[in-house]
Image 1 (cartoon, rainbow, N blue to C red):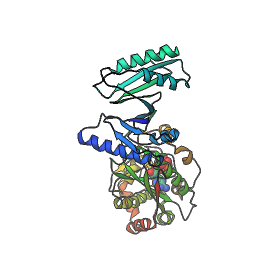
Image 2 (image 1 turned 135 degrees about the horizontal axis):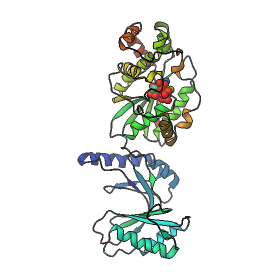
Image 3 (image 1 turned 30 degrees about the vertical axis):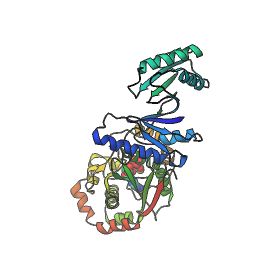
Image 4 (image 1 turned 120 degrees about the horizontal axis):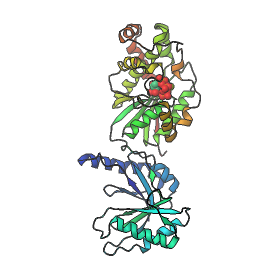
Length: 392
Ligand code: ATP
Ligand code: MG
C-alpha cells in the first residue's frame, strides 16, 4: 500500500487547540488532493496518513502536499505488514533493498520512528536490524552523519512504512485557523510574499488590487490575477477585488500638493480596502512594506499611512531585506510573474521629490481638500470581484 505520511510541528499545540489544528489540516489535505482520487486521510495522532490510489500521479501529489500550510514535511512511503507479537523485518528489508536498486549512493543510514509503544522492538533495534540487512545485501556503508541516502521507517500499529526521501512542506499553520485578512497586492515582488507569510500562519486571504485604470492599461491586473492564482495553491479558495483607481488619483492630484501624493494614495487604498475587509469579516490589512525601502516606507510615512485605518495593519516583511524577500518569492513561485514589466498605479503622477517625513497635522490639513467618504464609496462601488479556486 502506498501512502503519504505527513508530519507537522506540534510543540506549540496544546489541548483543544491541537484538535482544531489537526482537524483543519486533515480537511485541507483532503481539499488539496480532492481531484486525485484520494479518499482516505486519517489522523493517527502526531502524524497524518493519506492512502494513495494505485493510479495516483505521485509527482502531482508531491507538488500539492508541498503547498499545504501546516505540513512540516512528508514522505511518499510504501508499507509492509507488521506482526506486533513477532516483528520480523525480512520482508521489510527486502522491499527497501528493491526500492534502493534504482538509486545511486554509496553511504546510507536508517532512521526509525515507533508510533506504537507496544512493539517489543525499539526504533534503535529496527534501525540496526534493517541497516545490517541492507549493508549485507548491497555492500553499501552505513554513515550516520551526512549519508547519501536516509531510509525512513515509521512503525505504526499494523504496518511499517518506508521511504527514502523526506519532502519539506511550508510549515506554519493550516489555512483557516487564524481567521481572514485582506491583502493589498500590487504586481511587485513584496506584496505576494507578505500575503504568503500570513497565509502560512493560518490566515485565509482576500486580495485587493488598485489599478491605474482608466489612465493605464489592464497589464497590472493580469499580473495580479496570475499572482493570486499562484497563491491560491496554498489557500484552496480566494477572492480578488480590482479597483480602478485612476479617477481617484486624478482627484488627489488636482486638489493636493505633489509631495504628499504617495502618502495620500496609500491612505486612500487602506480606507477602501478596510471597507471591503469589514464586509468580508477580515480582521487585519496586510501590506508588503519593508522599512526604509522606498519613500512611502520611512518611519514617518508608515505612521501617517497607518493612521487612516481602523483595522490592524500587518506588515510581515517590515524587518526583511530585499534579498530575503526575493528568495521567498522564488521559493513560493511568484517571482517570475512579479518581475514582468507593468504600469503600476503608484507611479502615476509621482513627484520627483515625495515627502519622506510627512507630519500628520500637515497631512490632515492637506486632506481636507478631498471628499474622502465620496472617494471611498466610489472605490468600493467600482470594485470588480473575481473568485479563484485550486485545484480548479
Ligand atoms: P511591492 O513589491 O509589493 O509592490 P513596493 O516595494 O513596490 O511593494 P510600495 O509600492 O511602497 O512598495 O507598496 C507598499 C505596499 O503597498 C505594497 O507591498 C502593497 O501591499 C501596497 N500596494 C502598493 N501598490 C498597490 C496596488 N496598486 N494595489 C494594492 N496594493 C498596493
Ligand atoms: Mg510596488
